[in-house]
Image 1: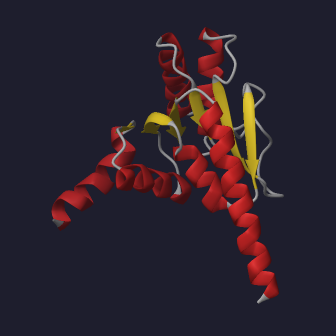
Image 2: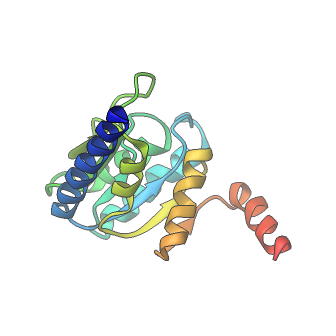
Length: 171
């Protein structure tokens, strides 16, 4: 029981820290996508272009903040256009021993111990979200955006169409 209370207390503290920190940043467009997509992949190149387009519109960008795959590609594209400006590339990280490092293109980083809090921080103070192909984490994030009624875009017809067809055929 004491251990459970301690974990709950840690989660509450981390949630408060996340809320206070992210609200100080400019509202961003959150981009979701898989971390294991190589640079040669079409979707990595699309992520670079997406980051450039967001920067051209002078919006900050937020991702899971890894230095690989579709968490990094939008940051790299964004950095090509917007070099300075404070919290313009926002990395929301989960601290795990097997995960990649933080993107060197991030201008601010928030590290979290609990997935729940990281997920909430990805959705706080955002203008909307864009999802590139990914795995279960990306799907979870897309469903969270949808549940919250936030504007979002799915990029990559080939990837998303089977899922959307399943929904259409189920209702």
